[in-house]
Amino acid sequence: MILIVSAIKLEVFAILKRMKKVKILNKRMPSVHEGYINNKKIILVISGVGKDNASAASEFISSKF
Image (cartoon, rainbow, N blue to C red):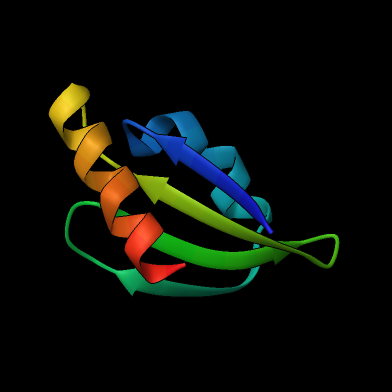
């Protein structure tokens, strides 16, 4: 599994376009997308800008996975 954390969607838009079998696990912030690239599971998190948002996203992901 590969975890990618980004502040804004623009930073990971190209990755999202390449992902297959995408599931949105959380629509609110942090936005969490699960999918596959080359048969590797990708968890993509869009946390929002700032240290507090990044910290909250990290806590959210660690509690889920």
